[in-house]
Length: 105
Image 1: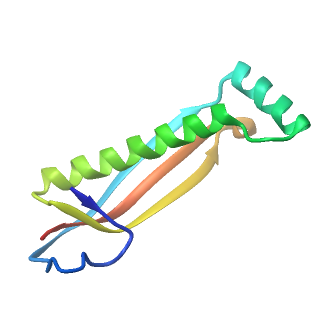
Image 2: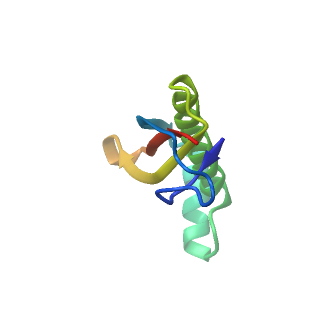
Image 3: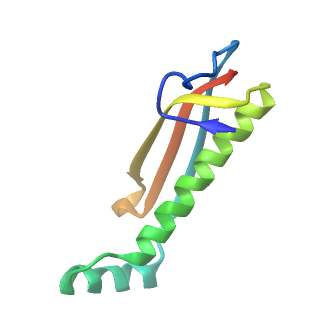
């Protein structure tokens, strides 16, 4: 399935617009990961554990969105937007959402 942030797929005319599709993933923070991330913040550098969690959440949100498009009979999602939000008490959770328009090319 083609997933793109652009409104069209070059060279592939859109036959049908099937509707908006979304995928959301909420991940909780882990005490030990937070501890090591704060150490990384103090000494500098990137927080690999948080980056891994963020990448996994993004992939899962896109996969959910693709599955919703498949159920509608789509073979592509155009105009994809990714959003990130911190949720929960003390910002203890991260939500990643992906949305776009399911189409049949």
